[in-house]
Image (cartoon, rainbow, N blue to C red; front, side, top):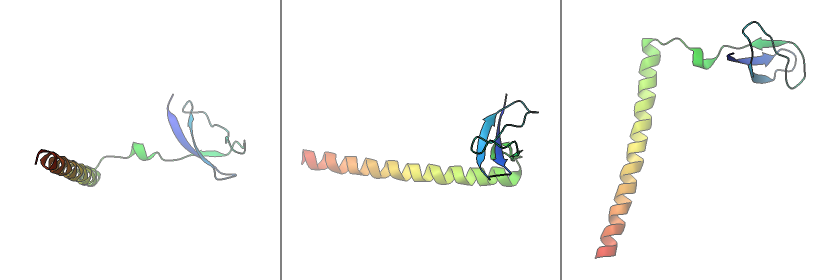
Amino acid sequence: MPIYDYKCSKCGHKFEQLVKPDEKPPCPKCGANKAERLFSPNATVSTDKTRKRSLAQARSKAGAVKKEKDVAHQEYMRKEMSEHH
C-alpha cells in the first residue's frame, strides 16, 4: 500500500496516510471525510531541466562539503605543526 499526501477540505490540515489507492482516509485532526489527495513532490517527472537543477544542487552541496573538509584538514595541520614545534 502506498503512502499518499492529503489535505482536509474542511480544516486545511495536511497529512500523510498509508492507504489502498481507492480509499479516502478521514482527517486525523477533525475527523472529516473531506481529504483531497495532493500531488506528491516525489512523483515528479524527470526532464532535462529537473536533471540539470538536481545536478547543480548536488554539485553545490558537494562543494560545501569539500570546503568544510578542507578547513578541518587545515585546522588539523596547524594543530599538529604547533604541537611539534
